[in-house]
Length: 152
Image 1 (cartoon, rainbow, N blue to C red):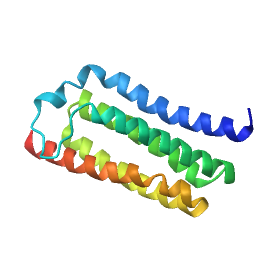
Image 2 (image 1 turned 90 degrees about the vertical axis):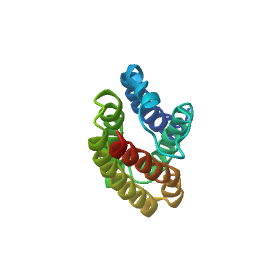
Image 3 (image 1 turned 60 degrees about the vertical axis):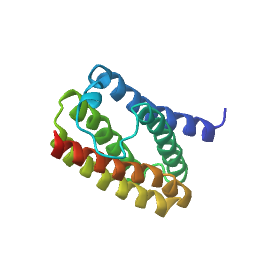
Image 4 (image 1 turned 180 degrees about the vertical axis):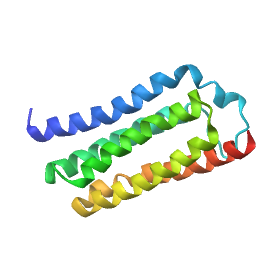
């Protein structure tokens, strides 16, 4: 297996592992989503794991592309910070049920992902573009989270 292939696999697996571990730690608290007041346009619960899996794969591919060009870049460090902040959002929202704090945390995540996207773009345009669905999804999640914060 080539170094390039190993790099892609590694970054995709790291991204999926962060999302998977967060999901595992919140699985017993996900029922909260069924009983809270949700905004119009709330997708069914099954949409979330599907979308997040795709987004984590895109994150991993983008990070691998950047790493292969500049292994010691700030972009990779911001990618790591992104994973850290992303990991805790669902714990704050689902386990702690701190909806308003989760919204503030999500705004922080959006800012980090915007920075990551910009840093990726400067190194590898496709890597930056691959983060666009993630950023769009986070903005949609912000809409959902803010409504839930205000309505519950």
